[in-house]
Length: 541
Ligand SMILES: Cc1cc2nc3c(=O)[nH]c(=O)nc-3n(C[C@H](O)[C@H](O)[C@H](O)COP(=O)(O)OP(=O)(O)OC[C@H]3O[C@@H](n4cnc5c(N)ncnc54)[C@H](O)[C@@H]3O)c2cc1C
Image (cartoon, rainbow, N blue to C red; front, side):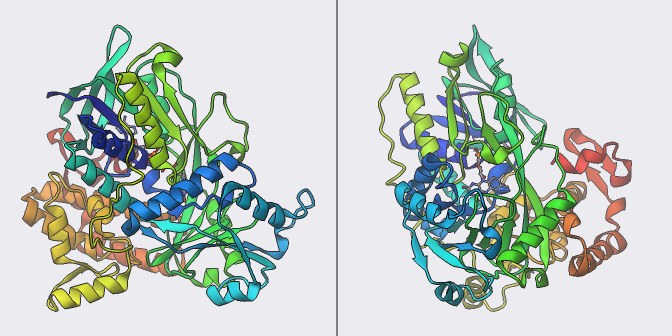
């Protein structure tokens, strides 16, 4: 299949989605290609914190200033995707360091210099706001941190871009760049579900492939060093705090706790990995998250860890970093491969933070305008993206109330996250080749305490009926989803989680014989699980 457009964007993380919307709003014909589902990379595996910049104020003043500026913009333009929790930065008795004896005062002054609204509150007030916090805290600062829902944000950007005519191709991996006399003239992509190939000719290609942007740049013969830094996170089954809690100390492992919907997420580590597609969650990382979580909230370990996952930060550097990746700037890089490498019509944007995606998109599209010789101002900081009356940040009580009011006979398909049959039917209708993961992103199906134990087979049955999929296709979709859920449970498999897992195994292996189901693979192949050759099979979907 062949097509043409003006600008192609590679990568459907928050940076790519932001760029697509900005391009479309400035009048460019454009298309985005993403190899997985929406926010399949780092943007779907991050901590969920809309930074106030306080974390970077002491060591990286530029990043701190960008964060607070964008924090305020995003709260204004997409309030439905942001829960304005506020944040507390707490000093614990073992936070002092002989090297930096008065870090809290240095921190407070650095926040003020960066323009971050910061207020010292009494420890009694801190405990009144957050009763489960460690009562041994010695000082506390309030900052405007918030919690953000990435899928809601990315989806609203794609929807807004589509209104200007932009196209999005999910599950399309760019496998080659079209080159003509040293200049990029488009991309070749493969639909990873059907195997079909598509070539899109364009005037310019923007590489926003996050930790994979080095690989994409190499398709055009350009060398971009992106150090992949893995960070592990653990979701606890209880929202034990209502504000983002940070340690008042130089950034370290497991020093932030973020309330996200009905859970709390503790993170993270920072470990260099050679391949952003291939890394393991280590036991020491889980232990450290739980131990450090317990320093912030002493009753932490009484709650149940639901799952663990890891994301990979794209840290750009001109040279290889040393071993301490926390020292590498969280700032972003914008590269014009025409002037840098002699390969024109091709730019890369990488690094940065989720919080600064809009600014990164603005700078990337400014460069697109300069390269294509047009002057079109950016309007994204003033454009309200939240649809009128859009649902507020995920809250279970509101779902229950809505469902009861709308139709008391409505069936709940996912009882943990209170997702109804009609919500699933509406969401399924939006996709050509839906995967259960798409419903997870849309509705949080399978994200609650049972991690898909009860809802996965129900959803698979609904998909078969509504999408008229073959039984083999449905089996494949079901197996892929469960395998992803189980992958996240494995690192925290003890106590109640182990019991839950055994129940899930009983349902899927004992009762439904999942290991004996025939599966439809791409390219028309059909196999049973026991016949699959590669162990990595489940990871590829
Ligand atoms: C553990 C962790 C916690 C973090 N926490 C925070 C936080 O709390 N707040 C914050 O502001 N920032 C946080 N960050 C940083 C933030 O998540 C990232 O900076 C941001 O999400 C990067 O977005 P991106 O769109 O540039 O990259 P990505 O989200 O990785 O998007 C790149 C996309 O490109 C796609 N892709 C790759 N190759 C191809 C190809 N060949 N063809 C098509 N598509 C391709 C990938 O599938 C991917 O979806 C965190 C990072 C990590 C790792």
